[in-house]
Image 1 (cartoon, rainbow, N blue to C red):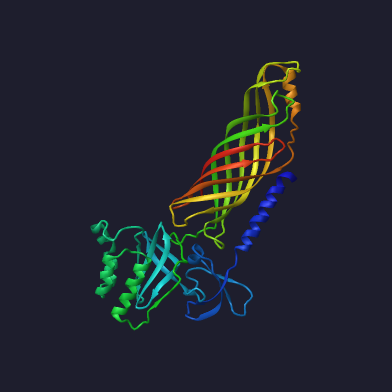
Image 2 (cartoon, rainbow, N blue to C red):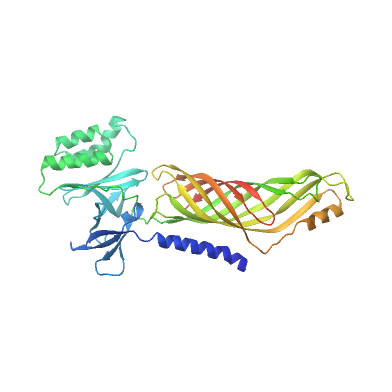
Length: 411
């Protein structure tokens, strides 16, 4: 039992330490309450998804952070990075969603953005205190592609901006993306000459996707299954005529685990923890025994059993805006073998007994190994499909190296 708890304790301590380090990024800022009072202090500013759903604020003279969610406050800003977020409620895909939206332009016509919403930017226009208009951007789409279809998409945007010919002209000619929409709304405010001063914010990359008010989690559960090509090598020459021989086999492998996104450091950085099981079935046919034994000739030898191990280590996914994200991973493997058996299928009891006593098999101990691999994450509207190709070295008393291909789902 103690042997079982040891790797779990190490895993929990490592995850706890990394989580604690990921907690705080203090930046000078302010919040505006629902009563329009401005309070200044420090904001725990975390990029991407955290900013749209949570504001951790510590007022000047206070010792503790207070967490505010969309609707608890009117808005908040980060003075050091010129970023500003405002509580908005908009109808998205037929449902009302409340979130902190990143402000691109503030004025008579204001423009907000949620980055990478359903694999495309979501823009929100608001004229004064009127109703909001939410619309998707055009990722990688040429301005003249599918003119009729595009005309229907941007007609509601045109109706919001029709007071300015300069702004609508830019709208028809350009793509609906962050730089173009920022220029369009700024042009609109300059052309209409609203009494409200226009301000363009420098930092507009902080907000991330939200899903109708649903909460984004930093941790995700994972289930995986695949096949493992196993190899065991011995260098002792007592059994065979040669100084070494290698046995190989192909067996299934199943895994469950948790991925924790360390977006405080980098949006693509994760710490992974897995519990995995695989069947051991490695063999070599035609083993030739030494001439000085009682039995001679070739024999088929097989090593069977079970492999239980705990994987823990970092992983990094490249291209946070890509649909398919390449990844690399590596870490430590706490390995335990149990139920091992050697058998020699030659009909000789003497030969079989020799194999059974040849290896010292300890069923009550964990060993340290390592793993390293590559893969990809295919993002879905909910969760992701994961593909891992790993090399592992168990480093146990019976060394086993393996190449493993696994496919799984991240919840």
